[in-house]
Image (cartoon, rainbow, N blue to C red):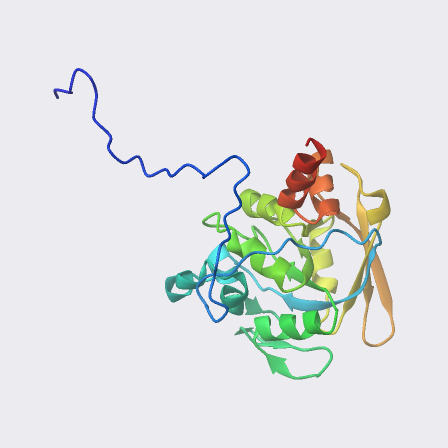
Length: 254
């Protein structure tokens, strides 16, 4: 193949330089748009253990990123986090009824789609927990599969095992990603459970946390859970997300 000896001429490289070093360009999005939305930073960690979090869903078996955040027609909303979050875990199977996208709202007792229950909890100032099986989050590295649960108030994802990339994506969004120390502890989770995550104030690499299950019959169970966080990833969690930490560091260096 012959190439021009002086290379190719580029008349338009697709880059428009800012008007000045201090220029501030406002991004205007129509308030009724369901295709675009300005992202707001997630809240940082409160500094306390997570106490009395309702179970959102206990997933049965295979749960890929497409089960967590379906593609297809939903991709037209990928620029609007709140809108695309309506598909949260709609493909996941609820172990308690073998149905997809039908879970119990612990406050109302009504069975609804996953995103509706998550929004209900969030609107009442309540965070929630997702419990999963093996290789949770396998498949494409779909970032929305981590952003959507975080946006709808899921603070903890506790599973038998993670697909590596999805586990990292959850960490980047400030979600606590945990694995059962004993695989059979998965079986202990009941539909009406409330969960405590104990030990976050001493959160450290290679140090287990404790889960306390509060069953609806008044009994309790507790067991250790594992994590793979390193020191930097723990700082992501404390800041609320990896982007929050980066923003903080950039401001600190100015």
